[in-house]
Length: 324
Image 1 (tube, rainbow, N blue to C red):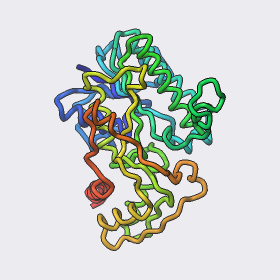
Image 2: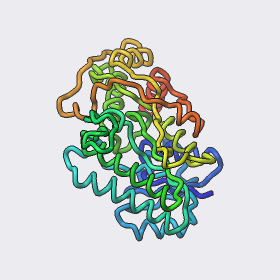
Image 3: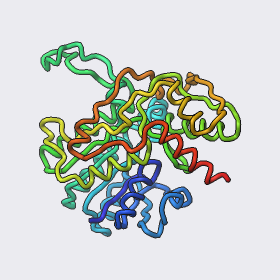
Image 4: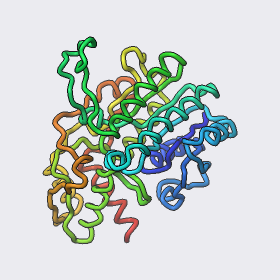
């Protein structure tokens, strides 16, 4: 098996690390691989780094052909995710939707069956409508996304499931919670950067600022774990029943007070203020419910290894090791 990991960032680095620890030499495809940041997680010599853009399908196809790729983990997304898509919707739509279609089409052309893509549990929260009682004859039958980013994720899930239904692609979409974890490079979304900055400030004795709303989080190492489990699963479920879409979160709804307590447990004496900056409010909502992990557990074997306290402690330890 040779895995192509598209997007060598916060989650892609963890996918590559797990594959390498399992004895594989993955191929990482990124517009600008951050080798120094990757080296903090694994020896870059144990992977193949390819520079390329998923919006250039011939480059993508050449990499697949050259390395005889057998499965794909697609983790690339638009910069700053929800916040970035609200600011520049066209770029997010082009990259997230057409970029993903380029990946799946190239897989179809080369007979690569298994394609796992990064979706988001924004589709569980950034929705409105659905007051048509699921009656498909009514215009308001089903909830619709309320942000550009969520709209792109709904599109790639629907397109991927149709590739599964009509072209035999073994498709899986990972609905990650808000991801945070060890990553010194550029990239990540609003929530991940908020957590990174909160830890940095707390370690310096400064006041850490945490978002005011309840959130569903996932640690980046668990996001990588769920993705690798989807790459290796024997079956991904029938697309006719929505199989192939999996919630990957901590399985809890963390209140701001919970996150503050976790930070103080990892950094005794940490000073914390709970506040969501107005500019980031769209990407840091007050979530109301917990995503169901039962399908991911049953089909992939996914159980989160990091709760809130464990995740924050691991991130603090990693940050200390880098700055000491």
